[in-house]
Amino acid sequence: MGSAVYADQAHAINARAVEFDFATVPMHYIPGEAMATHIINVMHLVLPEGERAMAQALAEALPLIDDERLREEVRGFIGQESMHASSHEKAREQLERLGLEVGPMVERVTWLVDRILGDHGLSGRAKREWLCERLALFAGMEHYTAVIGEWLLTNDKLEAKGMHPAMLDLIRWHGAEEVEHRSVVYDAYMHVDGGYARKARQALLASAGLLVLFVISGGYLFHKDPSKHKGRFWPLQLASASVRGVVPSFTTFFTEIPRYLRPGFHPSQLGPMDNALRYLAQSPAARAARA
Image 1 (spheres, helix red, strand yellow):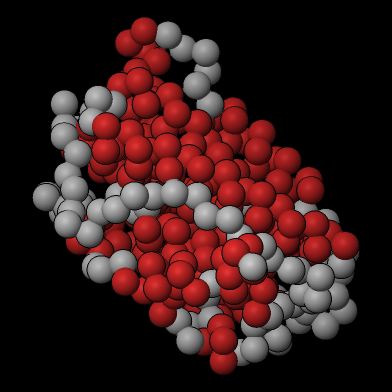
Image 2: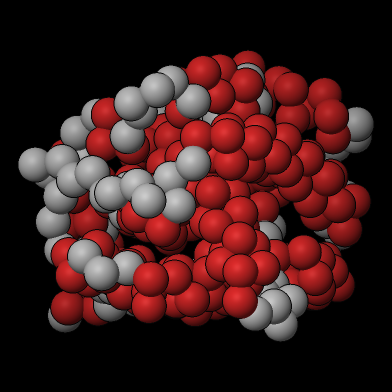
């Protein structure tokens, strides 16, 4: 059995109250960037379904974790993911009011996530083995969400493009919390199982799965976009946005694999989380909730 590895920067993880106002958010909240907008939409319309399954797996793992500090971090992680889901739901409602039909896609993703990543009613050894597989997969996914979270915090292209401030705050707040809790699922997996072969196999699946999810879901949202001036041929728009840094580079899903699979790797090695903690302290949504 692996043991959790903690860095000096580790601290208590808790859900934060936030209050977003999406009333003035337009369909293309990154002006002139229809496809880039829909790639960001994938982050807050589709990914929360995976986060829900992740929280469920961590809840199942809690009885197997005898390290009280890690148990506290897992509980904090579950609370943060619950807050993410409710905040993103409000953004989804605004986009639906503008005519973006996202319900069928979210329902399909929900069905797929439950069908593939649910507990399947297993028991005994099979239940534990399947839980370890899911934790390994989610640990790999969390590596990418942490990397993308740091990109959201440090990238200045979205602000320069005039992205709507409420949506910019939403994704940066979410990204900051992804950076903050980047080690939790990894540490839970290492504590419950820790096998390298399983970690490597599921990391490759996580990388391929997320890449496919972004491309297919982004294309679907572009197709459902009722705007007359959204442009044409979304793959070219997507490639252009990636090259210009308006969305994360899709090469990330390949270049991060060697780092994640390096023996001795731990998510704390991604770098300091100063940017994340600083943003969480000054996020307009967090300040609005405290007012």
